[in-house]
Structures are given as C-alpha cells and as structure tokens.
Image (cartoon, rainbow, N blue to C red; front, top):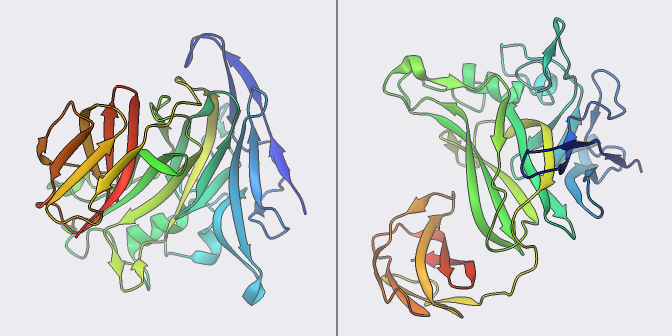
Length: 342
C-alpha cells in the first residue's frame, strides 16, 4: 500500500500572526504523471499533509470500493487530469478534472503553474490532529468539469441550471462545517453556482479558482474535523441530481488563535424532540443564544426567557420540523448541542 505524505513549510511574518509557520500544499510535488489520479485504488487510505509544527497532520481520507471492477466511492482524490472543456456532461472523461483547466497556482511567464489538485466528493472531510493550535487557514475551491458541464447543459440525470427559460432559481452550494469533539460549532458557505438573481445576466457557474479564508478562532476549542457537504436546488427521489463533486487546491495550514484544551461546559436541552418550548440548561450563566438549521443557516428564535441564568426557555413553535443546533454563549465559553423540532 502506498502512502503519500507531503509537506512544504514556509515562514511568513505578519500573516495570521507574527513569525507564523505555515505549510502550503498545492499538490505539485505529488509523484504523479500527467493524467494520473490517486483515489485509493492502490490501497491508499488518506493523503496526509504534515504541518510546520511537530505533531500536526491534516488527513484527507480516501475511499475505494473494489466491487464491480473497483471505483472511487468517497472522500478525496488527487488528480493530474487537466481538461476544462465545456460541452456535454461526461463522467468518465471529466470526473477528476477542474473546470479552470489548471490548478490554483499563479500564471507565470505565459503558462499556468498548477498541474495538480484535489477532487472532493459530497461528504468528504478533513481530520486535524495536533498538540498545538494549528489548523487550516485557507484553501482554493472551484467546480469540477463534470459538475460544471452538467449544470451548464443538463444531462440524463440533472437539469440545465436556469431551466429552458433561464428563470429557474437554481443554486449549487458547498457547506464547510467545523467540529470540536464531534460537535458542530460553525459553518461557512461557498456558492459554486447561482441562478437566483432577478437579472439573469448575473447568473453564474464558478469556473475559476476562488480563495476561501477560514475562521481561526473557536471558543469551543480546537477544530478536529471539517466536513464538506454539497447542496443543490436540483433534487430527485434519490437525492441530489447535480453531480456531487468539487475541487480544492493550495491548502494553507498554520497557527490558530485560542486554546486547544478547555474545561468542558455541560449543556442539555429538554424536551428533545420539542414542539413549542425548548429549555436549555448549562453549567454556566447563559448570555446569548443562537440557533442554526441543518444547513448551517441562522434561524430566528422568539421570546428567549431568563437570559443571564443557567437555564433559559426558547419558543420554537414557529420553526419547521427538522434537526437544529443551538449555540449558547456563557461566562466560561461557548457550547453547542443538537435538538429536533417536531
């Protein structure tokens, strides 16, 4: 079984903290020939990026199913397939391709330096292992050629974005979620396609590399996992019709603010599931409460009673049935816990 571990360290004073040590992973040193892909077919379980401080590693898990002749079934793939051709949606040709037709590295002396990047499947995730405050600071993202062409032209499974009239309010969004000790603490959205404008001339499908800056401080503690979930306006009986793939490149890992190990604050909600009123109890006085739906969107909660106490009541009768997360700000920090609305 091959194992790929690549680290490129540089010192950048004044960026994310004075004299910060950072690692930039652009995948260009990965030992791949042109057109090749690492997707777990040779037994690889993950692609590992080692940080500039001891004991930090970012793991990008890969999943490969050996049935039916073998196929990439989840997680990440590292690709050197360069083809950004716009045309019919073609799974076999464009699955491992980034729409720009090159990696996110700069254009220099008449050529694009980027030849390698990572392809993520819906549900892919990163695991961060560290004894220090080290984490992902930023990365670049774009559409895969396969997903782009499907949205642009439609195919046998997915619709053409905008529909025949061009007026359909379609969208394709990447939800990046952060977890501390398995608890979701924050989200960031990246819009990969947006046809929701009243002016159709503003509609777009992302075809270039876009930088995504991530939060570097979480009161809840050190983020140990980051998940990537795709959301499309085009869905059917079996879920999302739009191909669930995207591409990332130029991952930067470096110093995070805050403290990795903190005293845990207990939090409980009653009843759970709840229909009208939800009671939140914490081990410290609650000063502020936020509620988020399963997509990471903030939702309004009415009539919060007893703020400043260790137990507050929330009126959730107006919320739609589904799963939610509640985030409580206390004197000892912030704690999150899930609940279900009946």
